[in-house]
Image (tube, rainbow over all chains, first blue to last red):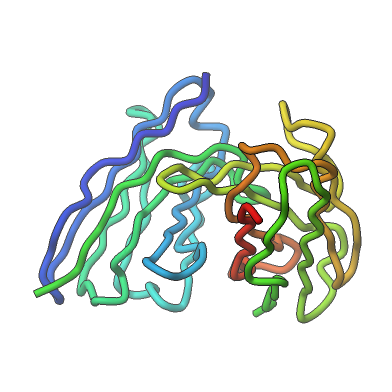
Length: 116
Length: 108
């Protein structure tokens, strides 16, 4: 069974940093590209970032480029989203998702609240 | 960036009735279109990909159609578990991957 479990969310002040993790199991992790997608309060889904199966290619939404860094450790079946210079508008539930075209499995999400 | 527009924003339907949801792309996305369902407090789940192919385990009452810029998700006979928010997403021209704003299907 495919499982994706996010962690690392919480309350953080604007301008500070946070690192999200996603632990994957139930499939050959190193064979799949992965993504982060977020759902902000009162808004729809927004794609945040993509990473290739090897980790050598990443893409970012304009809204996070230069502030967020997406990485993976295939030996640990894990993903990481380093979020720096956080803004109020980054408040959302962050989901890791398998693949990108389309997103075929999703984790349950971790809530990030940016507030002073 | 391809902008995805969903209509209506909210759809009120009685159980057992048919629901038709629309999704429009600002430029052609061919058949590279997916639909997702999201219930409150839950993760989204994949319903349809390739505009019309049901994902594994998705009941036949869900069907997708369209190509180019106009797409439709039809739920033939709404069940209680189908009341949720539905999103379309294009993956023909990316990055960025883009979603529609969602359609909330509520009980009439």
